[in-house]
Amino acid sequence: MNYSDDYFNEEIRDGYRINAMMKRYWAANMEVLAEIDRICRELNIVYLAEFGTLLGAVRHRGYIPWDDDIDISMTRDAFEVFRREAPELLTGGMTIYNNLHTAFGPMRVVNTIAPQIAPDFLAKYHGCPYSAGVDIYILDKVPADEKESNAFKMLQNSIRYLAQRFETKKTSISDYQKYYGNDGHSERDVAEMLNRVEKETGVHINREADVAIQLTELLNTVQGKYWDSDCDKVVHMHNWCRERSKPTDIAYYTEIVRLKFENMEISCPIEYDKVLMERFGSDYMTPKQIGACHEKAYAKSQKILLDTFAACGIQPPAEYLE
Image: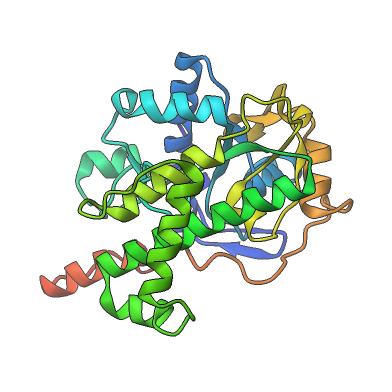
């Protein structure tokens, strides 16, 4: 994508200062979204702008000034096609990070894992050396019956808890002790919970292999259980299971409209007004910063880069300090 030179100047939007590097980071994210857009067209599937990205497209015709990421969603059937086919179709070094191999966070398409300062990389990503990307959330169906719905939610919460516990133990004993050392569940409790999950799902978990990955894959399978049913409500399971959202009519997502987002167009649900009213309230068109903004999404990537410069005894360019 092409940008005018002044696009990357520091800017004040709605009273919020956006520095030049953040503008470059925005553009890098959009390069990843453009690649996802291309692949979805090739595969004849649809993605939908979600959360703050959808709100930004409708209210600001681009990013919310204090936001710094891009969120999209896909219905379960589209997601499974993308998950299966996209790894072979991504170009320019882009890759899928977290292809459901971890229960922490959504699937993410990124331009790099570690920061890069190679000239060709900087040229493609508008001078942004940091890892940029797009989060992909899944829209899944849920049953209308309250008892069935609650049981479905409890099963997911059990699987996610186990997956995160086994993953944390695998990667960091200190974090494992911090988060699970005093959470009230003994190792015996965990073993019994794992047995119950196996019995309820009919899936055997091999204790000699990577238990966390097996559980995360199982969680994904369980979440898609009702997709082929006639249920007419959809949710993002991660939020729904934590009581952070309510089911939404699937009809809101059956047609799309292309809306301007900075200097590109992105796919949005044609019923975006109904979606945004449910997400943010009837006054969603009034800009207001609720709570803290994101803590500079590239902060970790920036620290890695600056530590590398310091280890080499080299003064980093001023823009890398923003």
